[in-house]
Length: 90
Image (cartoon, rainbow, N blue to C red; front, side, top):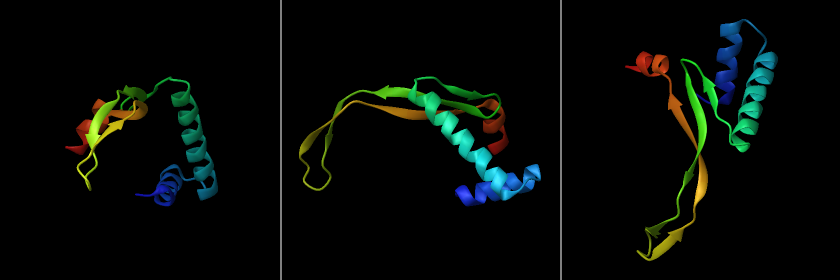
């Protein structure tokens, strides 16, 4: 499902216009992005939790040449599904 399909699904489920659904989705994405940039986590009970973790520096290999390379440390976004979401997928 891409963003346009998600907007369509939100609009039909909530019985609102596609324009309003797009505004709501964009607002959710912006608010979540801002919270994650600050280092906060976003928890949606039953759905899941978005958070930021640190990935430490490590050594890797260039797959074309086989040469060893250094991969720098960085922050990554993680999503942990909630129990309701995990249970509904089984």
